[in-house]
Length: 262
Image (cartoon, rainbow, N blue to C red):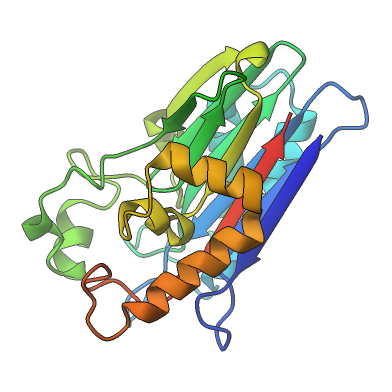
């Protein structure tokens, strides 16, 4: 098994809000990948005393423990329990009903000798590579399908779309959000390797159009996770002034990629 993981902040003066982990149980019965992209809040209050990195560390730790040890639980159940556990850790001190309470996108995958299970919530990406070279992206594209006019301001997003029907969902403080995730199971024999990406790396495809998801998968498989992140940084820097590709997006985002050959 080959594992390649790189995670770096978009701004070295600020903490990385992503979380990534790989679990390989001593039983030898499989493993898991956990990837979170913490949602950077706008200026102003969030109703919480804690930072986004605090939240992603708590949620990521709970997901890792439950995914490795809870083989009898579905991934949906695991996410629900991890969200509830994390919410309980700060419910007494923070307003968890605030629309900007700390939250994150989620990629969760677990494999055994027979199957590969997956769960994706919001705009991080999971890529499944088959032995014949076919690459299948697992996407929660609800945010991408929203009209740009609906995303004009943070106030509009929070009032009408964030964790609401007709909008998009992230893992925050409500365990029921787990039922909104995109989930599935495929035979282990149909997956040679997989890659999990936060949108800070996914912009290689989605913003800079360097290639489709299959091309990105091949790039990280051949060149490595470090080379993929470095290439994204080069593209961001080149577009810093004209912003032909970046538009209103931040120039550098936290970037995390996990690649695993099963």
